[in-house]
Length: 104
Image 1: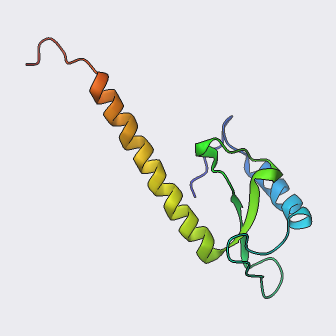
Image 2 (image 1 turned 90 degrees about the vertical axis):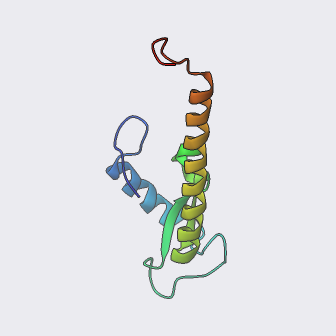
C-alpha cells in the first residue's frame, strides 16, 4: 500500500493508534473466512471495510481484521475498481473535451 500523508490520509502515528485500538476492541479473526491467528497478532492485517478512495473513513467502525490471503484478494478487487474509475473519468473527460480549433 502506498501512503500519502496529508489532509486526506491518516498519518502513520494515527494509523498506529487505530491499530492498537483495533487490537483491543475488534474481534481478532478474519472477517471474511473466519480464520484465527495461530499465535499473537502476527497473522491478521487491519483493513478498511469501505476503502478511503471509495468514501470510507479511518474510524474504528470501518476497520476489520483479515488474513493475508483474504486481504490480498480484497485489495486486488479494490485496485481493479480503482482502474475502472480512472478509465471512466478519462472517457468522460474525452467525451466532453473540446478540440483545439487549430486541430482538425
